[in-house]
Amino acid sequence: METLNAFRERLRAFYAEYTVYVDILGKFILAFVCLYWIGQVFGGRGVLANIFVVVFVSLILSLMPVRTTTIVSSLFIIGHSLSIGLDAAALTGVVLLILVLLFLIYVPDDAHALIFMPMAMFFGIPALVPIAWGLRRRPASILAVGSGVVVYHLLGVLVKCADLPPVESMSGYVERLATIAGRFIGNTNMAADAMAACLTLIIVYAIRNLDADYVFEAAIVCGAAVYAAVLFFANTAVGGSLNVFGTVFGSVLSAVIMLAVNYFFFRLDYKSSERLVFEDDKYYYYVKAIPKFDPLARAAKEEEDPAAGAGPDGEGGEEGQ
Amino acid sequence: MPDEMRIITMTRLAIYEKGIGKEDLRLRQFSRADYTALALIRTFIFTTIGYGMVLGLIVLGNMEYLLANIDKMDLLYVGSLLLIGYVVLLAVYLIAAYIAAAVRYRRARHNIGGYTARLRKLRTDPEKKET
Image (cartoon, rainbow over all chains, first blue to last red; front, side, top):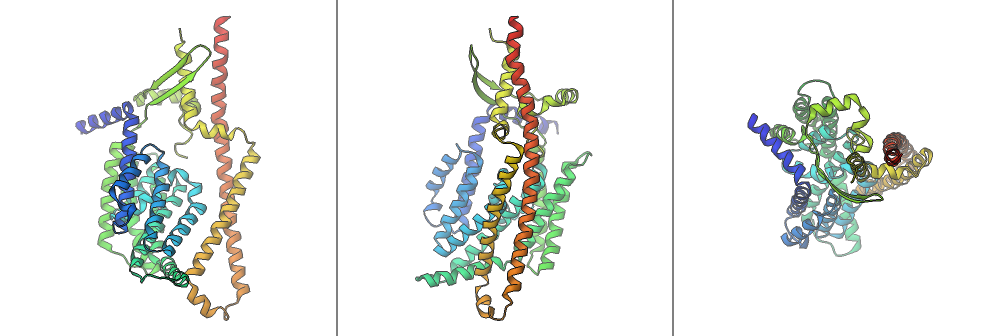
């Protein structure tokens, strides 16, 4: 345990020292995994699935905000669905636009759930994202997580529709579009999955806000159990199909992964170092601010002066929002 | 020789401006009523367009059924249901948008209060030292 604690502290100090490089590498890996996975979902065909294109785009995205990866991933999904047909691309575009206008525009900081949730569902660990968002974000994040569920089922419908016969006329496109839209809207599993994900997030959020020991761990375990239970009952209610063993195994695996992530990343304050440039009448200042890690001293100071931990210190306003 | 406390204060102010202060300082140009009104207008437009697109998608997905049964349907009743659904959805979104905008504005004003206090202290400190 002491070795793990020491490793954890070294990890935090490493991040504080090399924030810029770790962030760029992390964003590159994230973008690469997202874009590569999207290409594989569509059968690994086409220009957008080419590994060099994926690497090149990922390199560009590593220098941009994380939100850009979500936008580019969505464009890649539309691009890939063009290989199925104009109708599939139109449907994808419309569905993504609906999700943006009705949900994501209100939770822009959670928009990456749009890609993470389908990825987690694809790899059989669907409870991972609702639990993670419930631990770190807020109840409004259900809009983003639910949108991710919709994208997963949209991808499922698009991939299955690849076997539809090709069309040559505009009326054929409209007819096939109606078929694809009908399959998407008639998907009963989508409602059950969305319900399970949203309820899990809310319950995890409620538990982690309790004033008790080991709340994070309890929230993770309860979240996994709630996900499996709600999915089972919701599927029964809507008459959808469910792989019971796969759901239980996936929930357990999600909980195990989240316990590890929580121990190494979430429970620690991974503050990044800041590089700043400013000036006054006399000097130019080039400042590198590296965070200190002394939670007891910080807690005592904040107890004396609550304003010191918020507002102009650059903290406090966003956390727990 | 640069004053250490002054540098620390300026650094913290710069961190704030780079982080959450970016949005807070942008909000400063609006009055509470204007900011809330903008949020409500934006919500109204996006919700209306989104609802229309969802309706279009549902119609497209059920095209065969609708074409076969349109003459048997009570269009007035269906239209009323759609209108009531739109009004209810819009009401929910507008209330949520109003509350979110009000909370965000109050939080920003609180943060900016601390920011301007520190800025004022930064400006007055050298004057005190000189005197």
